[in-house]
Image 1 (spheres, rainbow, N blue to C red):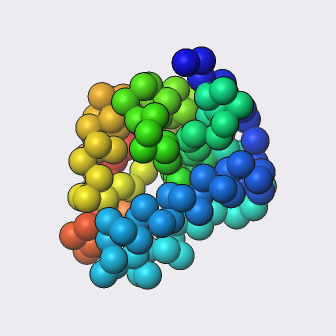
Image 2 (tube, one colour):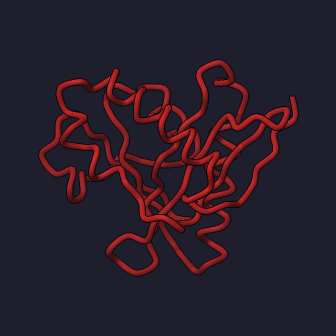
Length: 151
């Protein structure tokens, strides 16, 4: 299984397809709170993104956006199809996003994930992210886990 990573933007068709699947997954995991979080998960069209392919099939994605503080990016919309999880695809996407952000002069990455996604928390921990205080708009959210890492 060869993983191919492609730098795209968030208006890319394959990125959009994967985000539809991600949103369905989040609605299933967080039926009571996803309405609240849905707006925070959106990223502007044209933001930098990565799509992962296996055998020319889109299987994973992620992107980042500039945070309010200069030099900090927020990793967003990380997703890998369930049938190919555990094969290093998410790690490859995150590594590529981090390198891209660092090349653009950013010094830190932050992210938010949910308590209902222990597999994501484990991955981010392995990648060197540590839990930080919840940042806006996640302050006070019991479902949110915020993490950060110096690039």
